[in-house]
Image (tube, rainbow, N blue to C red; front, side, top):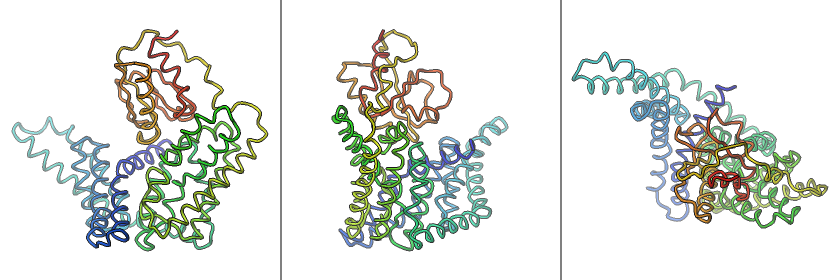
Length: 443
C-alpha cells in the first residue's frame, strides 16, 4: 500500500506540474473551433498534446528521479516512446523518463571514479544518450502493449457506464476519496489520461467534470453559512475561494468534522453528473483548478448551459441535504473547537528570521492560497524577516523552521523534527494565532 501511494504521488505530481500545458492545448482547441476558426491553432493543439506534453513529462519525471542529468535522459526516453505513437504515450513517458533518470543518476555516480581523466564529458554524454534511448526502447517493447490494454479496458468500462447511464454514481467513490486528499490523484492520475483518450473519439469529455465540479463543496459551505450565523462573515471568503478560486480543500474539514455531510456531497455530485450526462456536456481539456471560470473557459460554448445547470443543481442538492443534516445541531461547528487549545511547548524567543512552509499534496493549490493569506497577515502584524513558501508534502526542505498544514492532512507528513502547526481550515485567519504567537515569542 505504501509503495502504491508513492507511485501515485509521483505520477500525479508530474502531471500536476504539466497542467499549464494541458490547459494551453485545451484553449488552443477552443479558439480554433470557436473564436478564431484557425486550423493552425488546432495543429498547435495537436502538437502540444501528442509531442510536447509527453516529452516534457518525461523530462519532469527524469528530473524528479535523477536531477538535471536525469531530466535529459528522461527526455530522450520519452522521445522514443512518443515516436511509437501509442495511445498511452503520456503514462509511458512518465514511466520511461523516471526509470531513465534514476538509472542515469545512479550509474554516473558509480562509474565516475573509473572514467580516465579527460574523458569525463565523452563518457557522460555517451552514457546519458545510450541509457535514455535504451529506457525508451524498453518501454516500447515491454510496456506499450500492457498499457494500451489497461487504458482500453478502463476506457471501455467508462464507456459502458456512460451508455448504461450509471456514470453519475461514480460519485460514491470520488467524493469520499476527495475529502481524504486523494483529489489530485483521482483527477490527474485517472480522469485526465482517460479523458484525453476520450477527446480523440468524442471531441469532449465528461471525465474532466467529475472531480472538478465546485457545486457539491459550494453547497456544503453555503449550508454551514446558513446554519451558523456567527461565522457567516468568514465563510464568505471560503465560498468565493471554492467557487471562483477552485480550491476544493476548503470544504474538506467541514465534512471531516461531521461525516454525515458526505451524503450531501455525494448526492450533489450525482445530481450534477446526471445533468452533465443528459445534456451531453464535457470539456475540451482539463480544468485546473476546479473553478467555474476555468471550467467554462475549457468548454465549448454549446456546452455552457448544461455545465452551469449541472453545477447549480449539484450545489442546490448538496446545500439542501446538508441543511437538513445541520438543522438539528445547536452547537458550534467542530471546526472552531480547538482554537483555544495551546500548542505544545515551543521556544518563546522572537523569530527575527524564519522560513515557514505551507504544505499540501502537490504544493500548488491550498498551500499556495494559504501562504498568500498568511503573507498578508504578517504585513498587517508588522512582522519582517519571515519568509513564507508553499511546497508539496514530499519536498519539505531541510532549512524549514516550521510547517503548516490542515489538521486532517497532518497524517500524510513524513517524520520531521521541526514545529508543525495544524489548522482546521486554511482560509480561517483566526486559526493562525498559535503560529503568530510562536513567531512573536509568545507566552
